[in-house]
Length: 605
Image (cartoon, rainbow, N blue to C red; front, side, top):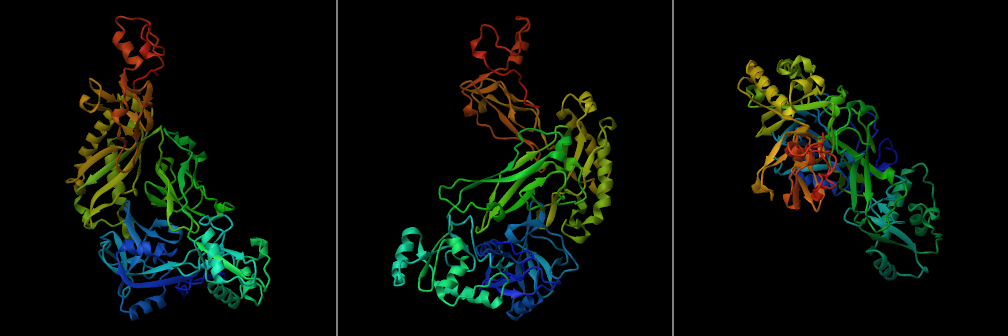
């Protein structure tokens, strides 16, 4: 769907959509709406709107439209708001997402009493309040778009079409959108010959009347920059496609033009976030760290590559939560935090990042895998609080009154953080990053993040991070019992970036003994003891960090291990009483099977 921002005088609604003025003030965006009286569940309504390059109505709710719906006997319609990853998210143009916050200043943007409860959100047309429903509820819905700008649109170069073809938005929605005009060999060429020609290179021949009707509409609008006054059909169609300077068609009124049409090409693309980090980074590097959302096309069909950057729409996410940045690049130190816009501390920028790309002329986005971004000098911990008695009165993040509990949370977190030894330093906590898992409308879990600097005191006081984790969890639970509101709660402490030591019994491997994965921070290159080898090639494991479920060892296929080999460092320790002066970086003399194996039995730290 094209970008019509700040181009209202050139934007036009599709013939199947009704134009409404913006009640909110000066018209800066065109509001094009189409009502579907046939009811659907939320997913069906969402798919229906996407198929028409639109989205479920969320904002810009027009009073005239409301009156029309009431006259038709409709009392509830779906909105483009849905619960996802702990937050209510609104979906708008280009599938852009942002966290929803209610407003008592705008009609149709305020929760009804005792809401929200369920995951999908409807609008009460009569009261103007938002009411949640189960997502399988059948409701009417309204699709919205912001129109299609002229004269650049409705016919434009698009990645959705082969090279030298055009994408046409405003044809009937049931017709094919990729089109290309051709001049017949002679004016006597009939429609049958045109159809046969189109079938050879495409799929069908278009109806010229659709384009002639569009030309008439544009002429009536008197859009600046569109001054062609040709009176014959050939010249009018030629003008719609930009004239001979664009299409290399020298058309006269005596010529006959026919238009071939086809469906968009099936693009195969891969999206990734760059640069790739397989290990930790330093928090001091955040000011120079910039992510880019890169898309790679794999098609053999030539597509319109010229100027493709202007026809790609980006969405960024951290831990699955949308970031309100829609550019190709993301500056990690300066983007507005989606949950708390005032949080710019480096520790709060840690997490798993991903991006989605929507191509102009396509309905669905390409999505990247998550890229983990964590600091080596900062330990990140998760506190999960279950079964808290006052959670039934807890206010959702999307509600206006959400911030009322903030001082209480800060006070309680300050009490819990007293468990951190003063010598290690004062921890920082993200008091508004709260995971809101729910069951039948009641909250089951509150989740807080806190951050501790990895300094010399931490390493001196504790043998490893598992020992520190055990002591910290024990002390936090003791302090939690002193807090009246949380006395009956269950507390769980997770490390977001460290996988603790894991033992694997021989029944799960072909090794005659216990295999160990040593404690390690976020890495894709963890080494087991004994080492897993495949024809002398070292096979490593992955410790994946997460600020929601904690760091976890990823599944490992032990069938890839054709042999096991103790690290040279371990062999040296075993044989130290027999062999002296063994160089741990070299193979043991007389043991050719150890050659070339990297020393060190612990995972990468």
